[in-house]
Length: 342
Image (tube, rainbow, N blue to C red; front, side, top):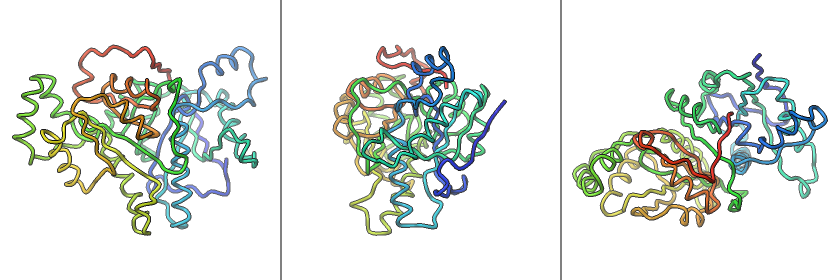
């Protein structure tokens, strides 16, 4: 049995049509920390059904999306160009009651100071163990976040931007509650893995030669280019109202490329797409974790697990994009990161 809920969890907020919105599909096991508490629920049953789940790694990101929506509604009351979050779970409908109770519980508490968190969801899809890919397409999904690497790969193969999230770092960096910050790796994330293939096959010197010879040849797009484009469209709505300096969305390119030898091609490619990031950090092979610790993004996307692990160790919520040549090489699973099936 599959169950799709689009009733009024927060009836005062009009949800946009999927084709007009920027749809973020989030699995329940990355929005909430469900593993331990779900075990208790399965053992002890309905007596715990009304207890809310604790926040998971995607929770601050989703809260920041809602903060952006609040600002957009103030500036454009009639616009449907908003973030629209869809909660996805492979649970059966009867198992999802605790999720619904978690979402319903907090908006009803109007004592903001005592609120551990608050959410507003209209769209809730429980697939009963079936693949969510068909629903992701129906919702015109712009980004899918899940704890299940297989489902993420399936989404990427269907052309849907997707990433795997992990249990949150033990010491998570505090992030802004008023500005959404999203950091992207370049190759095999925003761009194709063309240049990374050269590096993996022939080494660093050949990579530099290739980039110099092709600095005026644009890179092909990677799996998350469309999501950066969606963020840019919303940023432009704030810029049009004179709020460039007070924009609640900020984007970052954080790449192992060096600026002088290989950065030109990346920046020219972004410019040709009509895109830009607010900041671009060319680290020339230096660890990304310390820079991300300063940026404090709500989420960082990278195609290589050792960068994901390095970011996580320093408190950044990092998501793995399993795309490109790096996935064909053996990668040791980081000890600090765990996934679950959802």
